[in-house]
Length: 488
Image (tube, rainbow, N blue to C red; front, top):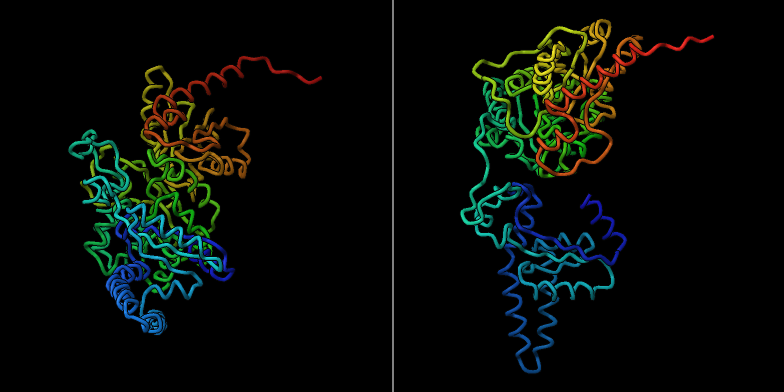
């Protein structure tokens, strides 16, 4: 979008000032040809200093100074247009002012005043800055401090409780490397988030088969599609919320052609402190309607390894979502096992109530069922595993034998997993046979905050699921006891 805007502004000769804050970083260290271009502009500092010194010397020569300066300037402009990196900016229709020390307010003000005087088109003010400037720890390790949690102000050490289980991201990264060791066709891709997605391990161990494409999700998806056409198995590790940028490419370049591209969606669900822009709450809805794609979510980090093997062995588009944060602490000693596409599993059986949970909501649902059992309420709990394709035989059997069917998902309700279950029941004429209650995120923006508190707020924890099931049972029992009106 930035390049499209620059192209149009240069064409229209719009009076526009663009400040390029150049700190040599994206989120991770910046990559790509444009980064090299900016570095070459930085490297042209010697040329600019030499130019200024020559101008001062020529102007100091009595009588001939002005004419020599004019001739030298004409020659300088011709040479600069041919050899200086900044010439590309000029060719795009922009006047280039820079580079400026971005931490020097006087220099910045002077540059912006000069930019305001340009009347015949857009201007780029190139400011050089240091990421993390002003905080010693951040200046030394700007990558780690890009999105820090609470820390000790004096030492800079993170303040957090010791984790009892690895993060889903780290499990993904290690499992991806294991699979890449066994299958030379697997290729790893990330869009400027190597650490955030766990692809950093693959980039280090398999540099020829791993790619950081920069903040360019659209390109990442189509790049993967091209690799698939050559017989490779590309795995795109992208945050759930950021794959939205590449949705058009996913539809047209991958799914319509039924290409063998895999999408591993980190931050599927509540993302915590990063807030509304980073919560991955839409992926079920925006992917479920796309033909050819398989969608799955693991109940824990052990099943995640099984799903990763299932992903890469499946021939066609497939996506797996998983949450931010730590796993539940299950053993991961065994080798990954293939799962049957579209088959869920019954984890607890009994009673007239069934809770069908998707992904991260499986374990809270199990705990809620245990609490209900202590009160004499037996509940079946199903790990759905797949939202596309659904396990239709299992879900239809539950609809025919249970009074209440509760679906639970860490995503928006609109178009989500629960909606998929309702559609299945309607297609088979069972929508009036069983009471269906959908649990998920309502139609509103979710603020930043601790994930546990946010999940509790929307009833997506053990207590919330327990309470919702009990309330739903009471509604059913109340309907049973009320006398039915007879039409005359």
